[in-house]
Amino acid sequence: MELCEKEKITPQQAIQILQKDGIVTNQTEAKIILDFLYIIAEIVVDTYLENSD
Image (tube, rainbow, N blue to C red; front, side, top):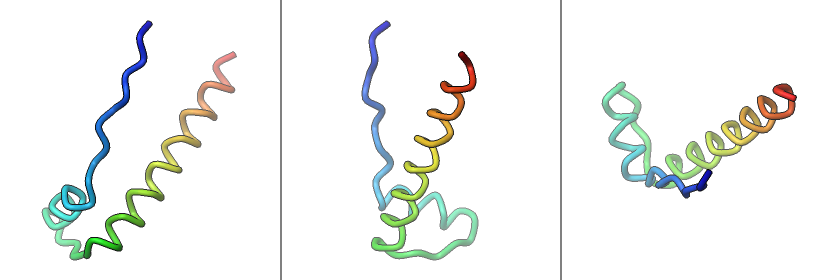
């Protein structure tokens, strides 16, 4: 199975996505939000893989 690097969401894309839900943010805040979400996603995947054994 070949692993491929997923394209990351840019802070600008995050701003646009959040604006659709009425959340106003700036570039710095969007970067912090994305960093947090990537950390949470990594924890979830690691936990799932540990529990699937």
